[in-house]
Image 1 (cartoon, one colour):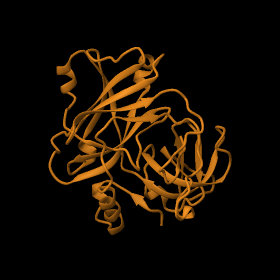
Image 2 (tube, rainbow, N blue to C red):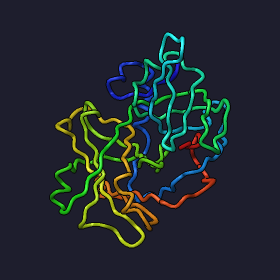
Image 3 (cartoon, rainbow, N blue to C red):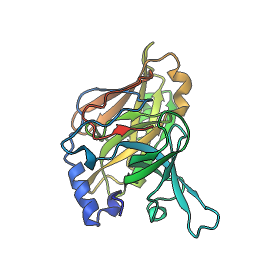
Image 4 (cartoon, rainbow, N blue to C red):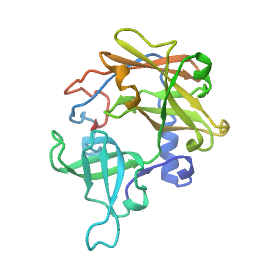
Length: 273
């Protein structure tokens, strides 16, 4: 069966619990990390046993369809560049995801080209379904900014790198609570802190919605970038400010310029957007 990464409610499965404990050992960031936008594709980095790792991973949305004469729905994925990924090992996948669900998938390419927008056929290796989608906000004062939540969290910068896709800022975060889907994450533009001629400043706000006790957990959040498109014009970077648990306010800087052939040193597989 496909390895399934899930939220805390899934942790009663022994294999998932083991993955969760391993993820907790990843280091959190304490310094500003500069992240390149990766609109291209890179090959996998060599490892001790490269065949045990899938070629690529991608942030996707699950799409359900009913083939003529078929008794069950077929699941495919749409990535953030609107490329369709058809799955050859589809059995049981309709029970692991729901229509429209955001996820991170790890896969090998069976057929098709990664260089264009035509559909790709993939063999799915792993799927992480604990991906929360945040919202956007525009505020005029610091007080308004705080109203969206200022509960601290931490961000993983290795091996689950922060990254920028055509539609989202994606961060792998560490927060405290019993149910991650109760939490609200808002990427906000504060008129009191706009940035400069080259950099747009945004702030990640975290509202626990009363769920601030229990164990801590790692999971992805995807923060929409569409609302900030006009503000990013002529900018080279987006600086996301984050209140961290142990280091106070820190920043992650995303480079906006397209960079083909990005070297993915340290990654097990390449990000496919």
